[in-house]
Image (tube, rainbow, N blue to C red):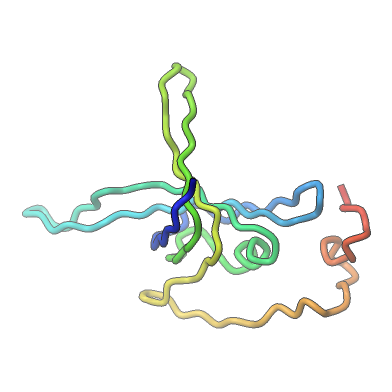
Length: 138
């Protein structure tokens, strides 16, 4: 079972856009979240967590086109834990989020947006904009 989650954090790498065999876009994001605490020595990051985030279809393409490493983002989606073993045989847990929404956090950024016209004609030099009955170019 998965739970709804909202994350606010920074992208630690540029988005990685891929396309499945069915032609649907998938983007992988790595987001780091942490709190800040003031100590005698100054500010310190606490509770740092790295999250794997996947977004699909048009959201995936929009993320790949709009986001870059270092951007402060807000992600809402469903979180799941995944258990796995590392090379030494130790059990590990990673947290993965299937994104419903991804946005630039405007606390320290400005942004402009433009609507995606889903009814437009295919762009001649964009192999991914062809109608769904075409075969993916790979």
